[in-house]
Amino acid sequence: MADDRSKNALSVPEAENAVNAMKEEIANEFDVKLGADTTARENGSVGGEMVKRMIQIAEESMNNRNNS
Image 1 (cartoon, rainbow, N blue to C red):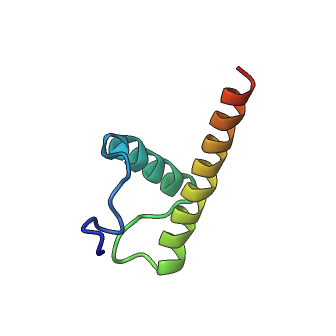
Image 2 (image 1 turned 180 degrees about the vertical axis):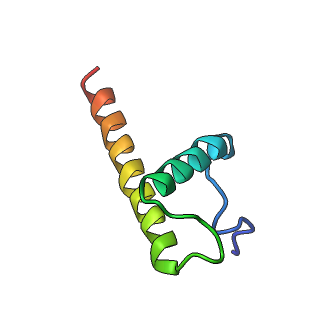
Image 3 (image 1 turned 120 degrees about the horizontal axis):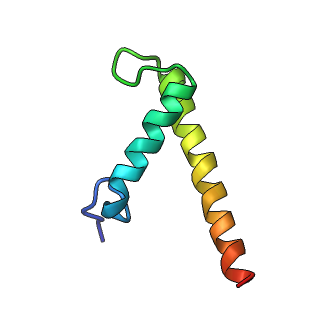
């Protein structure tokens, strides 16, 4: 069965603003101007850092739930 959603679609669409804010924050920290004129390595460094931070947020959330 084919999945009709885009691979880039958010699982929680309401989080779009927060995800975009995180992307911009990290790009600014890394001094990367996101876009087609930026190298894949630079754009990828922002995406990689986003993944690291989202994993950290999820781990902290799970830890807080388990300690409640």
